[in-house]
Image 1: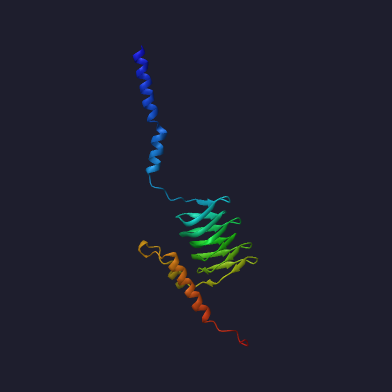
Image 2 (image 1 turned 180 degrees about the vertical axis):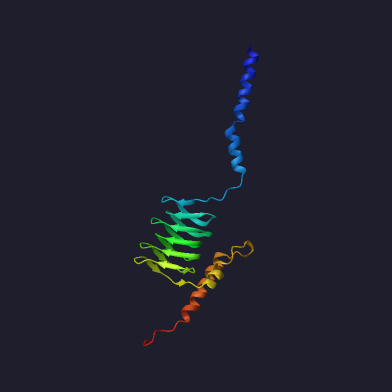
Length: 184
């Protein structure tokens, strides 16, 4: 009888060591991450300093400094969001504060209470009345493609090179402007 109980205890401990949750956890950890169809959010209390990259739409309500790259996705900077970074995305909507250049392949929208300090490079730009904006706007599709390039892996432009190209383009276009008639 004593031997029999000892075997049962031993078999129970073996079952406990190979429990189902551990197998599930290990399986999840080894599998590839799936592309999410939802919206990721960086909350108000989150602070990120450095490069931020992703393959899903993102809403920022916290503080982000560095570079934000969501080249094929949408970025929303919420009312509480503060972004001190160059931003590369498919579309950008600003409700909060940004300091840095905004590069979008489709659209940049600056909403009524937004504060934007930096250049905007996008084929479509909208700035609502009441928004604060300081910088230049480049809406030429060729300039957008030159800065952002194609999403092909072999031709990824470095953010520093893209920024330099945009600044050069903005300087060239501003030096070609003629003063209005009657002013000199």
